[in-house]
Length: 181
Image (cartoon, rainbow, N blue to C red):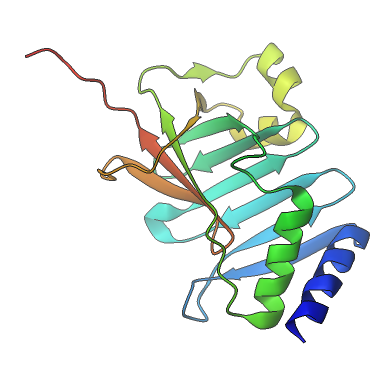
């Protein structure tokens, strides 16, 4: 039965132009956000409302970038989509469909990233041409930080969580710079 649901999920996610999923906190019925997949535009739009962990994230597969707006930091964090870290649009749709139908699907996808404090820029025309209108709408007027993928961090004090709850975790950590004493 599970195999049939998986196949239906793959075909359904590919054929439907616009899919919206309610994102629930793992282990409870508490709604933490929504995710909308725009298949024709190759966009995933995620809104998480969870207090200090609230964020909005755009996965723009046509441009090849992810942008996350962390409300607690009043900033936008941008990363190039790399296939070794970020599932394809079709895979995200399949995982969301499985999660909705089977309720207990767990995805081990977790991406750890670093940003450098003090290295932000305000978006300029050339940035918005590169990142596209969806990311511009999300990040306009905010400092932009470039993210780089990294290994899981031992000290997570300077990290924030974003992404798609129970599908793709995005851990955004401040890169600590060693200073000479």
